[in-house]
Length: 338
Image 1: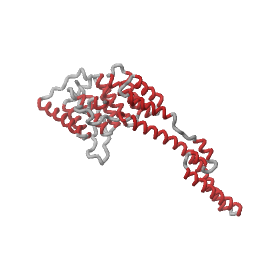
Image 2: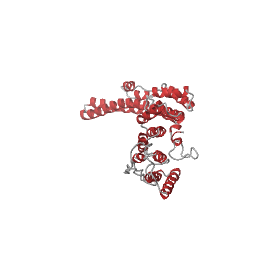
Image 3: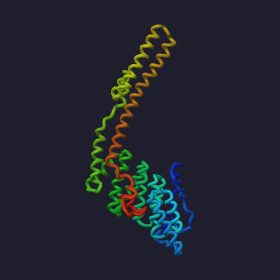
Image 4: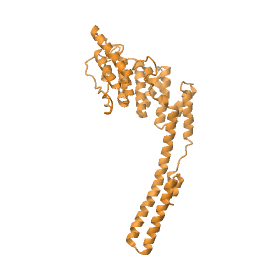
């Protein structure tokens, strides 16, 4: 099975920070002049026994580095393997997928997404295409780019040929994609679907639905009301529960007003003008501070609610543990999904 184009799909990954023990490779597109035709139609490269032994050793060493957590060096070995076999053979697909998984586990989300997208676009088998799409979607979800993750999961959800377990995982992560995008109505629909179908994620989905119910009950503050109340210095901050700021605002406004009035009555025009300008600035700052405080209060309430929902029900959004499935080879779908 010709998988040469997968080598070209190995995208340029950003180098890791200097603190990393080994620099990230730059998987630039390969320059091999192998036929770019359909994978099922191209012949398998003929290798000598020595070449086969070298390729097998390279793949085995790449797996060893991968399972030892040395992502970046393992990528180099997988790319070397793909070069040695000219992108052909039964393990070429897995090696290309393993590059994507290594980038994922090395938190090179964008590079992983592009690598796996390249595999999906050039895959000759539907199963491989679906696996690569799922991996790319997971990469973009972890990269906090739900706008890129959702279309990939949706393709799997709407494809009648998607294997049941993979479709279940795609629905679960598609729901979270809408959640991350703030599209809570759509997220609720997919979580409810998991509950109705008694899916493996049904109990978790019930928990998320309960959290979504709690979202509607979040206490919020009206910025306009906070600003209006601040026309009386400090009262807007009292509305926000900021008692210390309210006391400070009322005290300093009172002092500035008293000092400015005294200066005007005493005919000290220069001092009176300066004090009046200072009071106007302080007063306006108190009003705008209360308005900003209301927006900040609402933002923090939503953020805390979201963080609590993720901490309680979003653990399975993460990539499965490195050794979660004993004996699972790098680059296999079980390592991406289950």
